[in-house]
Length: 361
Ligand code: ADP
Image (cartoon, rainbow, N blue to C red; front, side, top):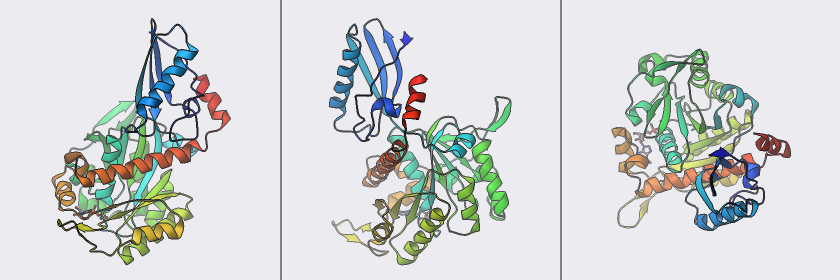
């Protein structure tokens, strides 16, 4: 087996306006006698046209290498890196960093963060989750993790190892100090804890690192959103007017620090009454209206569901424990939209110069 290069600059990724070579979506090419095996990145592993796309790649390889008889293509989720110098320094193996934020508490931000993270894993992504909600770290409870993180020496540096559960890597202040200690922290302590979660934790290579932010739009939230080199923010709201008004403040806060709002998720949108009708307990359409007002992506609406609450309390979130449920499907759709949107944003910034770097590797 030896590594060889294949030029797929003629084959466009089906969801993006770039070729597989431009995107750096051709990996692990190896040859054994008359057979070539390669991994190819794709923005949606559940894409309907996957077989046709595979044949296109196979034909292109056969055209370039006439002595090859067999081409084996394995699809992997293709995630484009967000170019950001500060991110490369602080979190070098992480392609995208996303704040999960809310203007006010109690809208289900942490529940949504955990389920989106697990849905991204089910879409084929490598995902980390930092519980930056210093004043109410609920991620350990929602994932049933209690063990303190291990410490390892990596490249002569002492590093924290994130906890791992359901295919997710997790770090939370709740794993390091007890709840009562965390709640009396002031802003600078919160920032330095967060910095430690990024710099002194061995994350390895991740497609997405999610940050469950403290609710609100005060000084601490503003500071934390500057401490993290963010690719973008997702704001969680309920349809209720007061929650939407606070979500608007959240969007404006991120705008102030030049972090794009990737979209709005509306939680507790309706309750399925079981007779085919819906009860709009907290009102209707608030999230969508906010998106229209600011030209933001509406990522989805999540029902109020007993199972979402129960599975969260049990430490086994619905996306993981009931993957075939309607709720899990909604979370996966939101995750698909996030992946596609970030791939589009990030691939739009790929230049010819980057291309040379990819080809040189
Ligand atoms: P936040 O992080 O915004 O404070 P949480 O995620 O902790 O909110 O959720 C608050 C409570 O609401 C939790 O008990 C959680 O289980 C519940 N909850 C959140 N989203 C839903 C939902 N869609 N359906 C039912 N219960 C929910």
